Amino acid sequence: MNIAFDISQLPEVASQLLNLYPEERFFAFFGPMGVGKTTLIKALCEQLGVVDNVCSPTFAIVNQYSDASQNSVYHFDFYRLKNISEAYDIGYEEYFYSGCYCFTEWTEKIEEILPDHYLRITLSEQGGCQRILSVTVIDCV
Image (cartoon, rainbow, N blue to C red; front, side, top):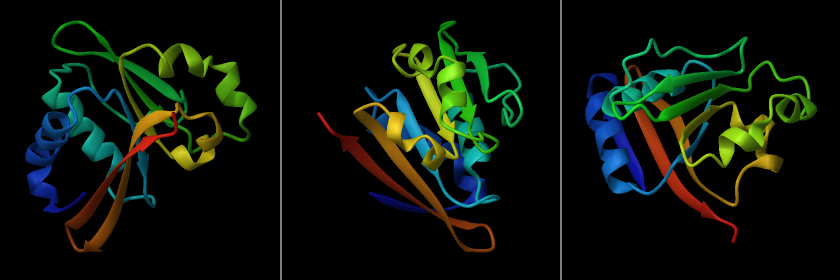
């Protein structure tokens, strides 16, 4: 599925994603720097009722937020990962298989340890504020 949108439409896009895929909990984001991965994750968190300050966990690797029902929401940024062993060191399995929402940025750095089932969300720039969002359900089971 592809969605073309303007940055101002992010709340609607986030709501649409959550409504189209209500059972999905793992959202793997792909796209170049500056395309809006973190901004879309902020919009998703707003739709989930997260009241915490949502920001990219560039140095921490993972941020934990709480949604409206006090469930955990995990936000990962693997940009600064030097090697896959760093993902093992943070105990990625505990997060990835928790049943909680997980949003990952720079996912290409950890593709070999992704769950067998997840949403692959690729963002690309179409010019100016226009973006293209491509969503694929990955199911390797």
